[in-house]
Length: 114
Image 1 (tube, rainbow, N blue to C red):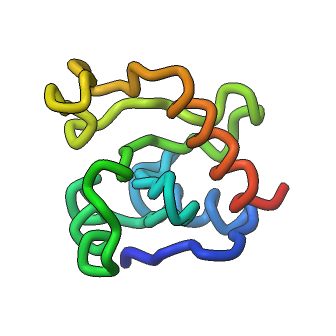
Image 2 (image 1 turned 90 degrees about the vertical axis):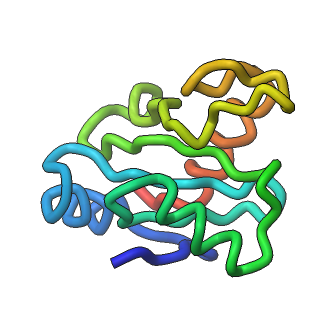
Image 3 (image 1 turned 90 degrees about the horizontal axis):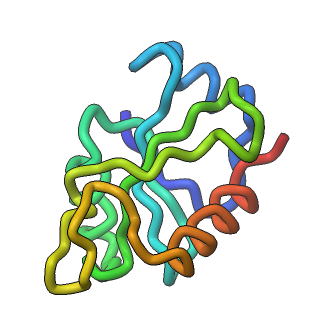
């Protein structure tokens, strides 16, 4: 079940979510403008669709994987098909802009309570 994290989620809750789905990771889509994220989808595109329904702008949505069992500095993986955006000069499944990467890390660290 996809949920939007507007305030916080605990690391233990993320671990439970990972165990229910992919075992060691949770797929997430982060809205870098609203500073929220959607988690729990089988595909990043499912989470992206929910955020778009919630009036998020496509340009602000970035797909990541969160590995809740890893240390904070290794927990986020920038890898999603929704990140392929030639019009935004993002030519990979990663997040090519270091500034956007930093914003995503900051948002995830704010939303996930250790």
